[in-house]
Image 1: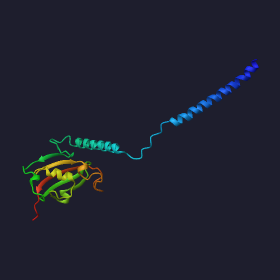
Image 2 (image 1 turned 60 degrees about the horizontal axis):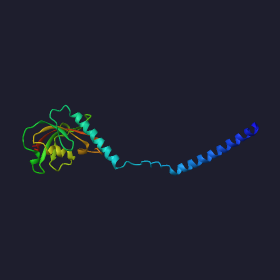
Image 3 (image 1 turned 90 degrees about the vertical axis):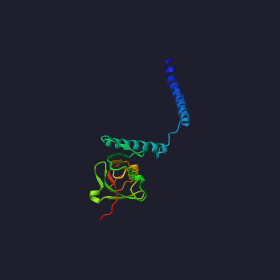
Image 4 (image 1 turned 180 degrees about the vertical axis):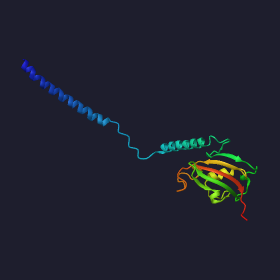
Length: 191
């Protein structure tokens, strides 16, 4: 009897193993049909990704400008992110009240935040600036337009109001904050 039972055990074990394999195969096959597909790989950012990227970039640039102007005595700012300080005011005549096409003379220094000079009046001469006509970026027009004739001021202009994403290679890199120091006078023709 022991011998028979001994012969029966491998047969039962083999049958049980066969049934188990059939059950597992059925489970795997059925599970594969009900499996949730993988998300398709992302090949490009969507609109929400781009909006978040630009929001974080603007926040970082604003923080950088605020840090650089932290030791200025009396900081003003525009709605477009330009931060400025009036160093000397000689008159109460607003530049914005001058007729369109008036030519101003700017004793200037434009530089990058790392101190690299872009242009200065000492090297290049005073800059002629025609109200609403000069091809400088919008931030310069905004800054000068809200100043008074004779003002001396310094400012930091964010890339969105200066040369933006493209810059002006090789002098101005992409997304450069521009440090400005200017004195605004009426243009006088050289004698």
